[in-house]
Image (tube, rainbow over all chains, first blue to last red; front, top):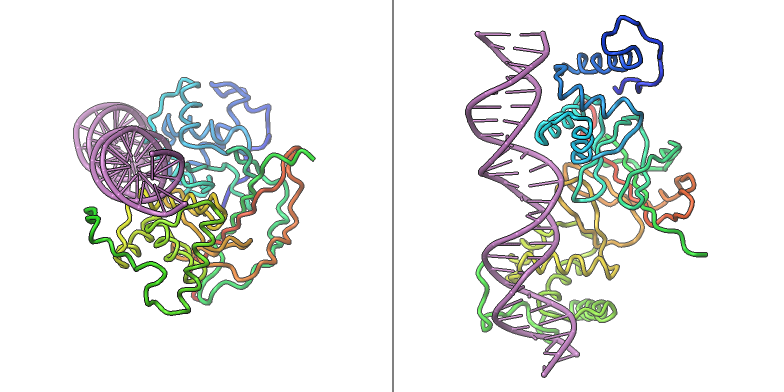
Amino acid sequence: MPRRSAKSRKIDGPAKAPLGALVGCRFHELRMKFAEAGLRPTRQRLSLGWLLFSRGSRHLTAEILQDEAQASNVPVSLATIYNNLHQFTGAGILREIAVDGTRTYFDTNTLRHHHFLVDGALVDIPEVAIDLLNLPPPPAGKAVAAVEVVVRLRDAPAA
Amino acid sequence: MPRRSAKSRKIDGPAKAPLGALVGCRFHELRMKFAEAGLRPTRQRLSLGWLLFSRGSRHLTAEILQDEAQASNVPVSLATIYNNLHQFTGAGILREIAVDGTRTYFDTNTLRHHHFLVDGALVDIPEVAIDLLNLPPPPAGKAVAAVEVVVRLRDAPAA
DNA sequence: TTAGATGCAAATGGTTTGCATGCGT
DNA sequence: ACGCATGCAAACCATTTGCATCTAA
């Protein structure tokens, strides 16, 4: 489902891009993502997508995203942010994470992986071998849809 | 729900009530639990504790607990329910579980175990060997405080 | 008597929704 | 033009808080 993350494919893009060659490439991939998902490349949506997907794996809340948008001089209403966050999630290019009952986090990394929770922030667990957990068989008539692992960390004992 | 007058507050009777010897024992254990936690054995708290801990492992929300209390003719305000739920959690006799961003579940089983999430309901995973997952070492200065695993299930493919 | 517990209502805060306007196709 | 997208504000809803009133010790 998830498309390849926007890694550095071809930094020296076509010089004909009116917005700058460096930006052009990833920006184009973003438009492709939206096209495949059937989402219009709106200004706000492109801005949000840019903030989300042009810098590697990220975990953020709607509020954080709004702050970043503002900082980038891209005023977007909270409602629109939520709309897009959910549309992205539905399109499989974003992942929703429930870490506590108060905030909803979104993860730009849709690949199978899990998280450390440190001081209220999410950190990817850098190896995926965790799926080796010997799960008992699910109840009859059911199949595993997703496995979510959150490892809560605390300050190490003074030792 | 209107508060009952001080007169009509017959909950389920104190320990001396003719509830049977089997029940009496667990009720005593409940009082012990509270005593150890430094929690006063008030009517409401005992009632909530009774609903929570006298029937084995349970997963419930504040609302569910309130409904059960009502059904048992034990009027308890929602605020008090939340208070006690959190106090129990702090005392280590209850466990808080974040399964989605909207509701907070509480688990009467505080032993290390994990959950299936089926159709919005939590089900204990009947094997504890899952902790064998080979976690990568936590970041420097941090230690694992808890590992939470939620396995989301969906209807199995028709096959 | 007194610190803790309870109840009620109001406040909170993240998220959602209704509806008029704006913009991509 | 058509229809999705956006913005604003009000609506929602689970949870929390303020405060006056009880109650266990």
